[in-house]
Image (cartoon, rainbow, N blue to C red; front, top):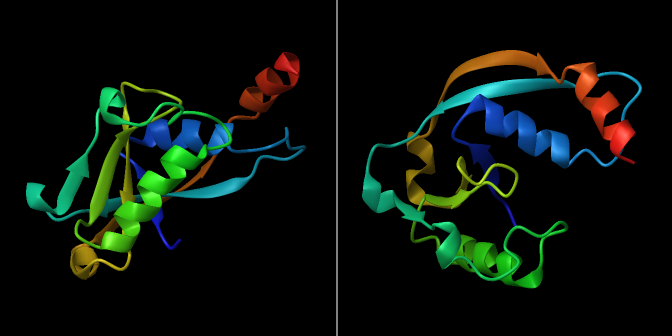
Length: 129
């Protein structure tokens, strides 16, 4: 399903990419942190709290209930963004943007910054294995 997975803060974006790295890497992976300007219209977004999400919404890998929720959201094309808690940091939020929504042309790139995870984070992952 075409989707743009974003986080509301740079920190949650870093955490999300870190937990989805399947192995510790010998060299840091170069990334680009992009700041987007989203339309300021609450009608364009569907927001869920943890209590409104299906059981197992934060499972890794994602379970069928959360995949179905996302697929249904994207197929309806009724909203630009699905705002959900981050499974990694539930006090923060991710926004899944639907590139097939008509308001996607109002989303603009504000800034781009080169980024790479601090290698010490991968050392911590290696310790936990």
